[in-house]
Length: 447
Image 1 (cartoon, one colour):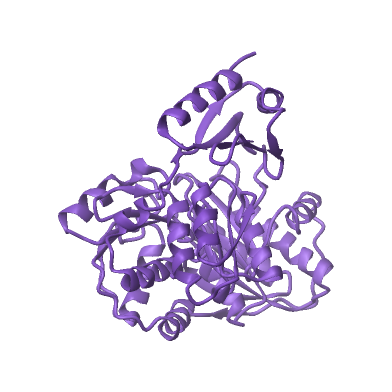
Image 2 (cartoon, one colour):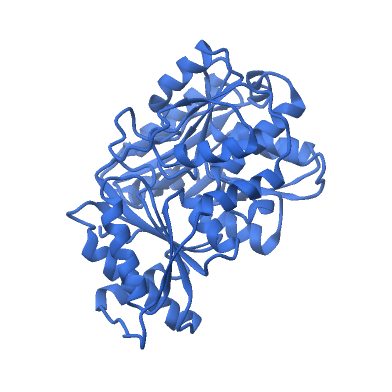
């Protein structure tokens, strides 16, 4: 598989992606803008994460932008959502972010946006790939100019206007040596927010652990520190700062669906009748909490661009998926983990119960974590499941979701990049969940 994926460009440095490719892809992106948006001049914000390979690719992207005749707005080391925010704040027209998100240190890549509108395979990335492959770049009359922008300062002042709560919660935050550490540190000083930091310094070698907060094995230090400090909760960021993981005061990790339920209960108090978009892999408890609090639950396929599109076009309060992306309508529909963290703290200040008690109150069904199965033929495995459960209600929005009764269901999807199928299941009790998982494993691995 090449470096162009469903939502971004990503590969191993320097074998699959390097400075030369960064330059050519930037030229292709500029050409795409000229062709689709009929622009001969615009401003493109360019940011990077803290990977060792990022500065070289960043500089080559800047060169590609200005040699295409567009102006480059230099952001330096920032979180991915700040590259989007730069557009929403009116400081640029488009953005390019040099990052490989939570991937290991040997990877790097590029993400494109027009603010909250990510440019991915369904709205432009395939066309960018075609232009890049053909190397069909037009030459401008004049080169673009270069500007620098301290977007962290602009963003910090924006948050100070949005949040004026006095936070009493004691929090520990694991930044995983990703770029969110330096950004959050500046934001916290403006907000007057105190926190106990773990691995605050950005380090592209990620020397302590992989910066992927939905992998529970990466959260061991955070769990221990939360309990040692008798903190109210702990947060963990991914490498580029757009995803969040949560640990309660007992050091227990909670999947994002229960956080979604908590945020929905909090936000719907003042916004009855609004939509909340959530991952189709979420516990059915999420749907129940949204309905019980006067909201409209909307299940959505996996992939954060779809939530942003729905929020922009159909309105609503927020959208979130199990991977830790949370995006609020009031925050330009951006998957901004710092904003999500502040909303969670705001809700906790109002509730004043322990987080563990709040989140366990939503655990009314037994739910599996997402489980990966390596198979020879993913399509064949899903077909076997579909045949086995042909008498049940089947939804094919994303893979297949099978409704067994009012409480039991499962979703099985194939990976876009590996010979895997991914399974999520839920039942009314742990015993029934174990039975269901055993039955599904037998079908998935049968020949």
